[in-house]
Image 1 (cartoon, rainbow, N blue to C red):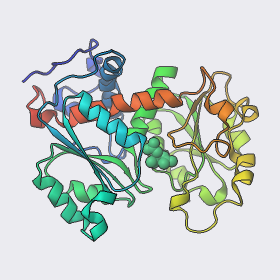
Image 2: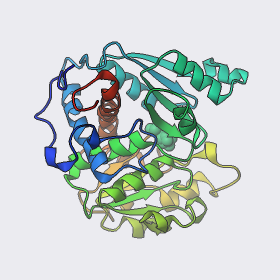
Image 3: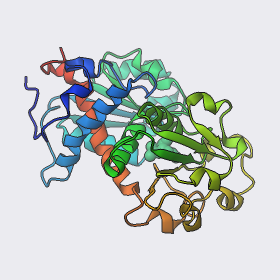
Length: 335
Ligand code: NCD
């Protein structure tokens, strides 16, 4: 078994994290909660080689050849599913996508039965997206292979936070002291939660901004500064991350109207001028142009990192699939 069977870019600095599998001792990736800062950095560093590979004409290695990755998506997704599929294929794995609409879930099968079925098919890694917070852990407890959380309800979306961190690192170099403003539906957003956990762990100064109805109670406990006034939250920001209103998770009326919402919380060119002159603009997608973000801002060349986020997403997912299957592949140092 080879440790390095694909083109590598010199490798990450060895003194940042413990040697061998101690660098990332977890069986799966269920969330950012529970990860040490050096473990987050390890995944970011591992992703760099895949960023490089993905920029080549030939984008495939054979590290995961013969392994089966199942993407079990119980909730709609475009970019995350595609990103995991491309990541698995570029690593040489056989990738199978299971959409809930085509599965027995619609016929009333319990989540545990679905998990046991996936397990019996001897998947080597299972990527799960589910509308219920905690569903991914439930499945992870029932299967023998590593499980990666691709978004569970309002809970966590760890690969999104990792790809966002990698995007920020590419643009800004460091996290310490960086003012990151996350604005939108903080209450229902797993992206906000995972990003808060990752960015505070890495030393960024995170501000969250939302209308009172869309701000979780006691959010200060997550070591962030809450704002209801978007202008105030933007002052001096290095990074502005905009989030969609998660209508599908709202029961009842949370905002007066999209027009009113844009007026108070939409990122417009005028508002952006309150942030640092080189502040970068981020959005995990899907975007509602003209609601939380204006097109002129979303497409601002040199400032908007939205397409870079998508690019980093593939590299991060490759890093996660690679690292989490190392033990099963008998990679030296991961036994
Ligand atoms: C996010 C998600 O699904 O949580 N999207 C994504 O993964 N790219 C954010 C969202 O749906 O608003």
